[in-house]
Image 1: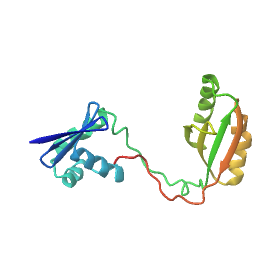
Image 2: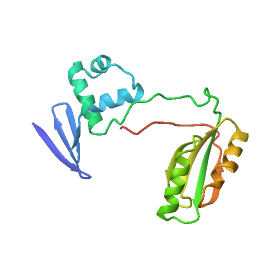
Image 3: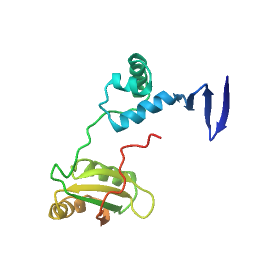
Image 4: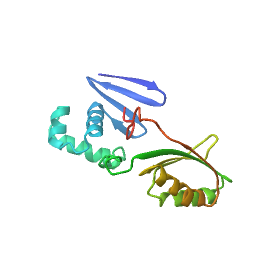
Length: 177
């Protein structure tokens, strides 16, 4: 027995206690969501432990992991690095406005910041600024050297505005629920 609901172009199919969520051709059930949730908090969790936590045997959990990876839901595994313990104590959010928003200038800017290790994140934005960067350096003097010596010298940069965060209230890698 199942019931089918149409909700914002997604179909929710209830089969006993297991819920399948279908978006396009990707179907995720409660086991998949549990696996994703567990890996989001511990990406090194062994398959046997995952299987125990979601009440499946290791073989189906391995198959589910492989499918989630192949479908691009799980895109990789990485270590979380404590920037402060590595000596990078100074984070700054930098808003950048370009002279013009044409493909060539956008591409040149993106190529330039991709090569700068100080730029940890770079987002193309809507609104008053074209890009939002998260820049991480050792201290304010190191940030000044980066700003004056590198970022302001990128062709096409019209203005830069920096904001220094006081503390992180919430941080996450990805939304998964």
